[in-house]
Length: 201
Length: 209
Image (tube, rainbow over all chains, first blue to last red; front, side, top):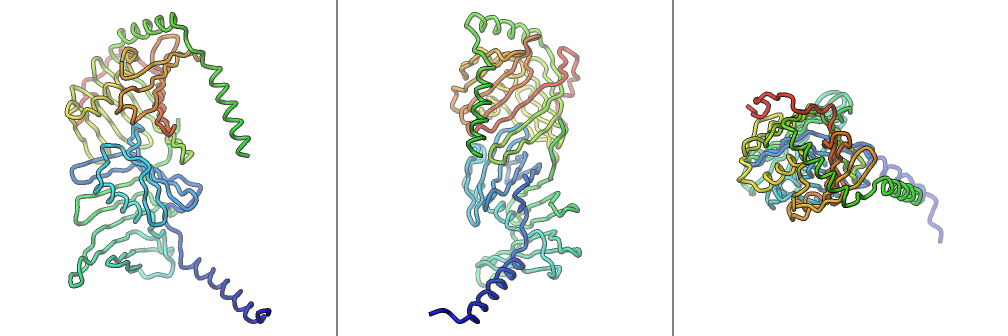
C-alpha cells in the first residue's frame, strides 16, 4: 500500500525543518576550517614544569590533530581528538606523566569544543550542564563573539559550584583567536597561546 | 590521482638516489681529515639561520629564523627572532632558556637527555661527530657538498631521530645545513646563511639575565 501523499509531504517538511534547526543549533567551533593549520607559540606551566613551543592544530575529516613541538623542532606530544576522545600518538618521555597528560588532553578537548560565536544570545550564556559540570560563555559585540568560557563544577549535591577552568580569547577582525589563555583555578596549570604566521625566508 | 602522485614520488626518489653517490673508503678518510682540520681551526662561528619544521600529517612547514653563535669549547646561543622570540644558551655546564615569560635555567649534568642533546648540537655545528660511536655514519657526494647520514645507535637518540643528515660545503668543509629526521619522517632542517668564522663574540651573548 502506498503511503498517503500528505504523510510524505509532512515528512519532507520535517526533514527540511530538521536540517534547518540543526544548522542553527550548531554554530561553528574554534579551529573548524579544514583548509587551515592554526599555529600558536605556546607557554605551558604545570606545577613546577615549564614548557614552551609551537602548538599546531588542524582539522582532518571529523578529527583534529594537535602537535606540540619545541622551538628547536623536537616533538613533545602529538594528539588526535575525535568527538569525545583524545588519543596520544606520541608523547616525549619528559612529558609522559599520566595525570599531567589527562589534564592537558582534557583542556585541549574543552578548547576545541568551544563555540566561536553565538548570535542572538545574551551577554552571559549558561550553555550546558553535563552531569555536575556547567559551562558559561561570555560574549560581546554585534556578532556575539565569545571572549571567555568558564567551566564550573559541583563537587557534591550540597556544595556550591566552583569555577575550575577559565578560557580567555582575544580575537582579531577575522574572528580567529590571536591569543588564548587557559587558567585552572584550583591547581597550578596555565596555558598561554599566541598565534603566529610563518617567518619569511 | 594517487598513482600519479606515487609515481612522481618514486621518480623524485630515484633522482635523489642517483644524485647522491656513496664515497669510496679512501675518499672518506680524506673528507674526515679535511672536516677535522676545519673544525680545529674554528674558534668562533656566528651565522644567520633559517629553520624549517615539516609535519607530514598537517602537510605544513613551520618556518622560523634567527642568529646562531658558537664559541670554543662549549658555548652556544640559538636566538630565534621570527616569528617568535626564543633564546637557548648552552654554557659552562648549564642550559638557559628565555621565552616570552621568563629565563629558565637547568644544570646539564643533572639531566642526561639535556647533556646528550647539547653535545650533539655542538658536535653538529663543529662537525666533529665523525668519531662518535652513538651513530653509524654513511658518506655521500651530492655535487657541491658532502652529505653525512648519521643513524643513531643510542636508544635515547633513536627514540628522537631516525637519522640526522649533515651537509658540508666542499669549498671549506664547514657545516652548511643539518636535517634531523624523526621516525614518522617529520623533520627539522636548519640552514646557515652568511657564516662568519673566528670573529670576536661578546661574552654577554652566552649569559642570559
